[in-house]
Image (cartoon, rainbow, N blue to C red):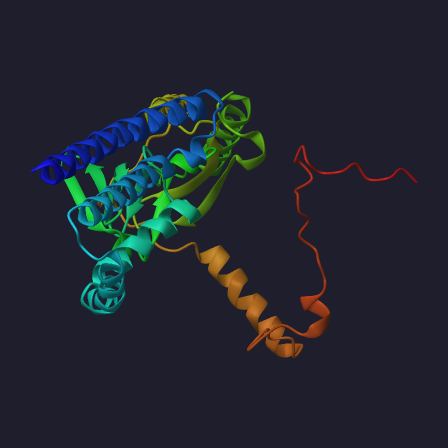
Length: 322
């Protein structure tokens, strides 16, 4: 009877020590996390929950072995059995081990961390927890997606939280009634606005007339916005787009939309004088054996007669005085 009571007393002591150890692990993890937050070591914070769970599993395992030893089990045989059984368990739990090592890979490589907003596959969401077996992500519609670590670690991950600036790349279409000088005015004013805007990176800002689209004169804008916060980016983008609308309106033109314009009027016919001049020029090419088909001659290919930038451009360097 005394031996039985002694065993019960030891078991209670082991349980008490184990409970105290688990609480101590939680307290230590909380203290370490707070210290890392204060020292801005956010990269190592993600490993704390995983490390806490591993230490708890080890503590519980030691407690179980101690209790088995207390009730009379042969620990040598138990450990040997665990070694043989461990091989069978490892073969039967390949997926679990894959997810476990996937979790270690996510913690070590840190493609994403807890709190990061990221794109995984074709979905987006915020990482809420990286566990031993799986990663939990809060989606935009506020549901929680649980992905096995092995699968998540092998995905293509795009981490939006690591952006230092954001890409602004809209395309504009102006009406075909826009004259060349109106187009030059719009290009110059939008370019100046981008250079002067304090939230636009000056070195990246550009706008170009890129093509004649089916229903518009297409302009392409490329710039980086100096913010990493998506909400702030939306506000800056809205401000720039409204300024662009003001510039287009001040030029006396308008933004195009998919449409077709039908003009009804008397056909003026072709310009006979210009047609005759074109035919005469081609006849002269034939008579002088200088017809530029299938291509120009080598002398004309390398005869650079069109100057760029144009003489009227502010970027043209002044010609050296003789």
